[in-house]
Length: 57
View (cartoon, rainbow, N blue to C red):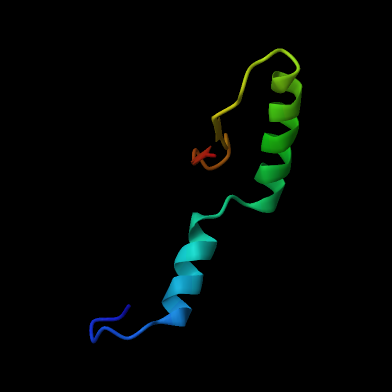
């Protein structure tokens, strides 16, 4: 909602896209979870060494 109380679809889409994990990181995250799942474990966070940004599921 914008300051007048109306829906703001452009801002809503931007916030949604910004909160998503990039596809190349999501692929690695899924593969790590599959491998960890074989041992009864789960990966909950991954950090990009290049940017230092942490991604959580």
